[in-house]
Length: 385
Image (cartoon, rainbow, N blue to C red; front, side):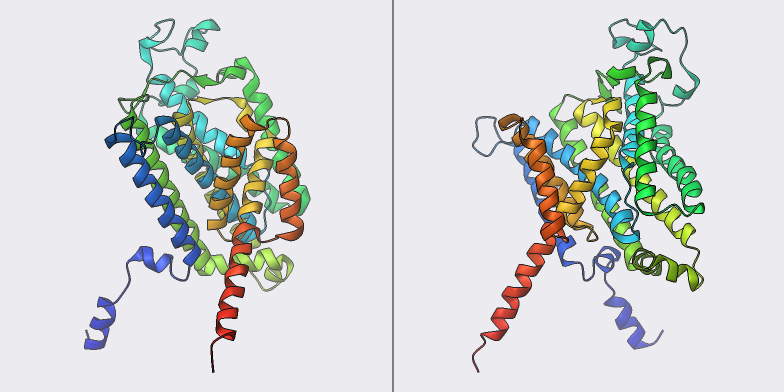
């Protein structure tokens, strides 16, 4: 190897920095989140409860939920912001991942349930089921569960996407059928004979991987895992966007007919991104369930998927880190205003979406970038001669 090649290899950046190269916004957002997670974990576990800087377990759980939602928003931004697929069905992939985790947590209860049955969850005993349904087999194994968290939403996305993209369904028509898919699943999971707890869903979880779910250390662990999942999901999305695949996806978003005309198989690119996004949404749902403590068919609601679109639009579509920012802004506002002003919150959210759509097409991060650009331009202009 030549000396110049050795020096070049020595100066090569770590893979994470290569992926985040020229992504100042992503670095800032992820760094801030890392610092917040570290502070929350430190103050919750090591500071006394009467300390001014102590962070409650409720806040830990709330932050963990926001991180799961941020991963879900990131998954939607990958398909909407970079390949132009406005999915109103990502709540379905999120819910399927959540139900997979919920089934594992229910199997861990064992004979500690109300009815003391070591095999059947309480709702199955109540419904006079005599044996465990076949699709519950394997969910007592954490490795099998982790595979299902990714595979089930990914498989649904593959089947749905293959049929839709092959038929060249696009635009508002695609959005409508994704919403119809989510609504159909919601109606199915509301049925008691489906074997998923009906309208009550799955709840009363005890532990995860042998650790008590109510313990502070377990809550902190879930918080850290949620941040790491968001971090890895962001790296995967950014790696895709920076690659040749990502450039083709952007071309499809901006001029699908022209991209198809020059020889690219548009349907295959769309399908790949759609499946990856669905798998990420499933992971987000799996992280959401043990922290919130319940999963029921209401999460399949089309309204939830529409709210998800609002998160991404408010944060900044087509930036990845903007979706994370939007998820935190809207969900924090929801937590505060649903208790302070419950009657007007939904109207305020709808109005905010209209304002952002009309006046801030690039969302909050787009506005901040514009202000920063004007400031920098002003500093350059005012430099003395």
